[in-house]
Length: 87
Image (cartoon, rainbow, N blue to C red; front, side):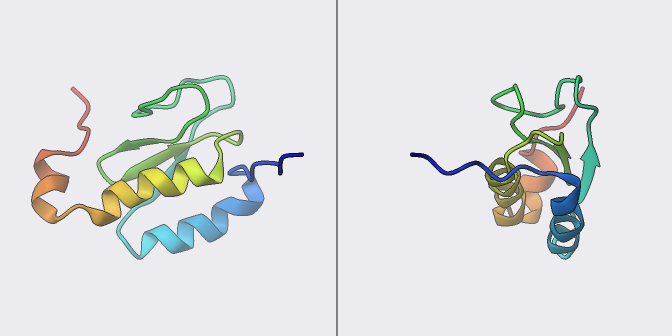
């Protein structure tokens, strides 16, 4: 029997915003029926563009933390030149 996956529900967002704001990140919520900008995997997986983490209510929390870690672990040069930048 598998455990349920924790989602980025409204109850999780305040805590996640507080945690990530310390790293200069912001969260942008995406409507349930919309594609997530910057998502590498698509579907409900989190997206990252510059310092903004894009999430839907059905985004797995571990996906949001995974994408946030990409940003957190980059040095300033990689954030400026190597992070997904929209056209």
